[in-house]
Length: 282
Image (cartoon, rainbow, N blue to C red; front, side, top):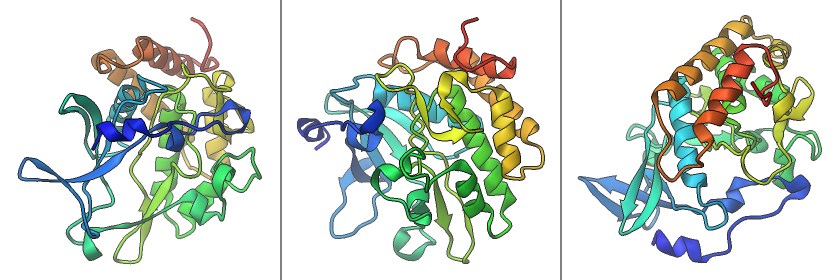
């Protein structure tokens, strides 16, 4: 099953040369019980997402695994992701965060920011229509007084900037609707380093009115957080950057990841901590 996903056409070519990972990365969903994998049928809830390597971008599955580990190190998710061999096909296994035995039918309802803000298709990118912006996302997350989710959004933004996750767009930020009626930001997902791929080098959502990843500084991150009325943006941002810095010092990417991935993330993170533009050459 995993091998067959690679036979389908991969990738799309949205405007501005952006890489939309929904079109690049194939995936299947499975359930895991008693050390065995099962195909899900007739509405049975899957518990894991499996992504095989991409023909168009052979390292991207392994790059994402490292990005998700970085996000976990910064406290953005508690869920596991790892590389596993499925009959000779190595896939990225991602534990689903929207599943719970306590939820109706085992599923937790989630809503991405495109849905919450009434955006569609390429409007997930701010430059296409302006319906989705970081400020508007923060307003949605904080509308019921949930400042913790707004702070988590700033951490997610910081980690995305540090690892080069250009595709942090409206469909890659979600909130969970819990059974008690409350909402909260979803754990981080689709945290994919992309600066080494063929793209325009722009973030999907502007940071302090700037899109080009390489030019953004810690002051831009702080200024962006201030527009959301975050109380201590510098402390949140610095803590996230220090977590990523410690992570890249101690953990390596998977063998099939982009060869320069660790060095790139280390440089981006150190530049931000030192007040330089992210893409500066030390």
